[in-house]
Image 1 (cartoon, rainbow, N blue to C red):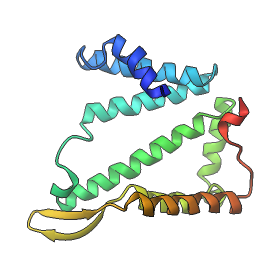
Image 2 (cartoon, one colour):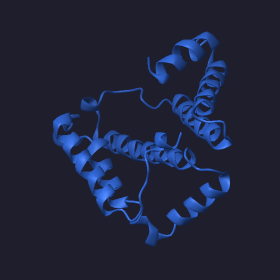
Image 3 (cartoon, rainbow, N blue to C red):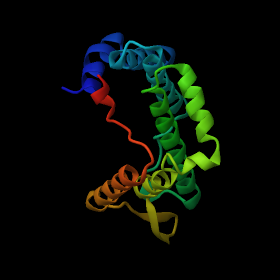
Image 4 (cartoon, rainbow, N blue to C red):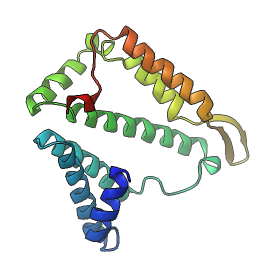
Length: 185
């Protein structure tokens, strides 16, 4: 059983899941994600990580992201919005991984300040991150027929080697060693 399924089955569903109306559903999502953060460590940064993820899910539910036409039935404007949402979601999730391993909130502020200086962006691998966004979050429009655009999603056997090469490049050409997060426990 994974942590996600355990949290769903033993925390979110017993709290009422999404059956209690809007406010109750948002509270259940937040409680579940805050507990997920606390499970990872007894520090406020872990709780903040869980809170950020819960907040993102609540916002997603509130504005209705993920509902609507399937990708093949989208217009070019809808496709552009979908790509923009994917890029924003990617950056929000990556931002939570700045919070997750930080020893304190002061370290988070210093790290974000360093990211905002362009000279440091190449040190943290911005080029591989942008390439990963292109490979994993964007459906490639092939042609337009009437109101529909036909999309090509790269198959897993193309995505996986590209991802492996990007990870290898970050490990080989990065200027510092980043240990696997769970080796710290």
